[in-house]
Image (cartoon, rainbow, N blue to C red; front, side, top):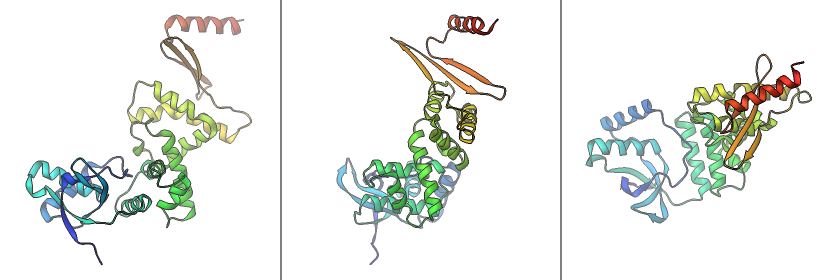
Length: 282
């Protein structure tokens, strides 16, 4: 028997009860959805489940329909009372794994998720205790995917685990870009990638990708010729209240050294050049 549709106040729904697999929303399709709901009403109710315990006013967790719920909340802000409650199917509380799988299935059919978002949901499902490992999470969340796709999803999940919080907009990376970074991490360049991102003052996505190019090129060389190249791991020199990081990068013409940190001063550069001249000047 189909669950009856209920009209549920927006304030009673916790959209964060489950970690969503979507980290960003495209504003244009979202605006189109809001306009459609305003003109024709909500064609497909959202799905909710009862929380084990209330969270403030919230009595229900969102199972599916994040974009629809967000559209109703936006319309409520601009049009008031007609959008104070949303039609919803009240589902029995299932296991967290089943709930997350339902969310993934809806988004796989309805919208294009980024490679990072696809990988991140497996990581969060593992972290929330729904699955014992990333591998089990991928198999449980994508049970109908062919083996080659699940293999790619496992790669993306490990990429998301390594790079979550490191990149400004990881959801903007293509699958090819994500795989390239993942291969570099597997080749031993993860620490170098994180150091480069952490110590850069520019955080826009385009600059971050450009910043990683020399590192990824070196990683590609290392993968092709492991016997002749070793990862350019950062060397850290730590002193009380001060720090210096010396990082090497492969360039088109050779190598470059990057000095960052509080001790990366002009006098230090003079000392370094004096030492290089002493060693090779003759």
